[in-house]
Length: 342
Image (cartoon, rainbow, N blue to C red; front, side, top):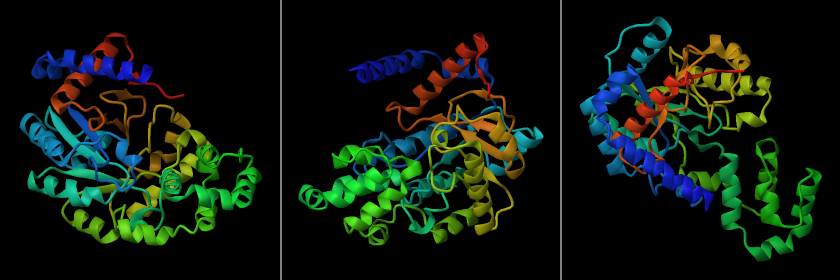
């Protein structure tokens, strides 16, 4: 009930924001660059749980591009790096697009439209998943839930109960126990897949969830940028600063070296509000620019850019941008438009 009320309130705020003229909001906010982030396409994912996320349809994404290209100037990753690192000039109302998780749908659906409208973008990869070598731990959990039959669970109870109990996870109810498996214990999922004879390699060959290296190289040749997104997409809140740094630096280096790039970019998986100054200090020499998702916002870290989430809003992009400008102006009045790091 509370979730439904929050959704209704947020939609009302979008509607109210839509009443303001875009040009006035842009002028008042005085932002040279907006960066917008996407992940996938509506109803495109083979995982029914992932598919419940709100994404843009192909037509909606195309409308986003048309709107942005009409009211903003698209720039390249070179422009973004020069702007952030050297203070180089860019058009007053510039935009840049990014895509997280390195899903194959970006090659099938987003990439053709980006080329059609001559819009540049950056794509962020998890090295463990490139070429479909492995599957994100949450997707493994979803696959186990989808495919295991109740009868098989009952027949093998002694075996899976022991797997859970050995890791101090409650083991009487299989699905409740499965929910308790977090990133740090995700190796249990591989044991469960072996136990229930789920062929992960075959599943990934049949579904091709992630980008392959050939597609990535083709996109690089077309001028698109790529960067790291952690090795295997953990929740950084579950990791120590040292583990966060390892995930970050290794993914940056892998992408740069594997695809012979002359730049280094990184986008944090999930939310980045709680990422510490200590981590940024550790990775400062490893990349030119990092990206988070906190809407239109400033940050204490000079090489960190916040991005706008459009795809989960379920409203047209003009309303989202008006809402983000208004929110930024309100935070600026309160002196809270700059994210401080601990």
